[in-house]
Image 1 (cartoon, rainbow, N blue to C red):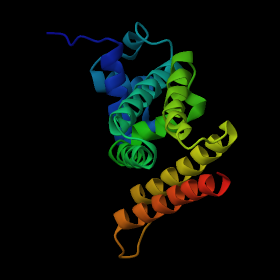
Image 2: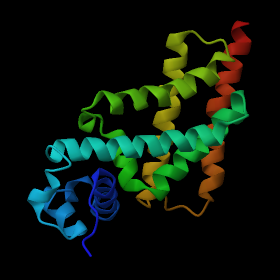
Image 3: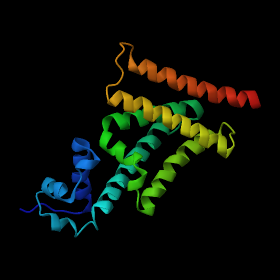
Image 4: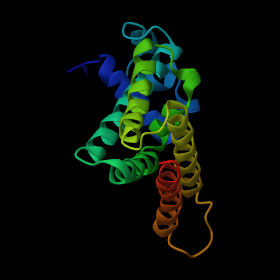
Length: 190
């Protein structure tokens, strides 16, 4: 019996390749091989490689968004930020290929992919409203937090930490510095 091929199964195959070989491993030919079909058959479901990578980025972005939402439900301020930071790190560690797609803005071609990125940003902005930050202050904080999360996790995934101290403690210490600075910043102003 012939395997049912649709856009979802194609994205599944693409993400499997991304996780094994990275973004560079995604080609029309490699996806077709993964699915056991001839490459021209893919064009019944995707326009081209660019479209395929956008669809894979969209799915990855949705996966990250859903994880962040689930982590932060019912929490506020520092607790919500903490839970979301841990989920972000876990997503990047457990899905390095998808995480790479989420970070590669040049791959986001559709409005839908760009919108989910804005929804992820909105999660952070909503939490930061409780701190009464200006929009600029909130964006600067988000950029700082994202830079920390990305840098720490990238170094961790690449096994770049060689000292014996426990990584979870280092991660926690960094978050504590960032979140304490946020609390102190608002207390100093108000």
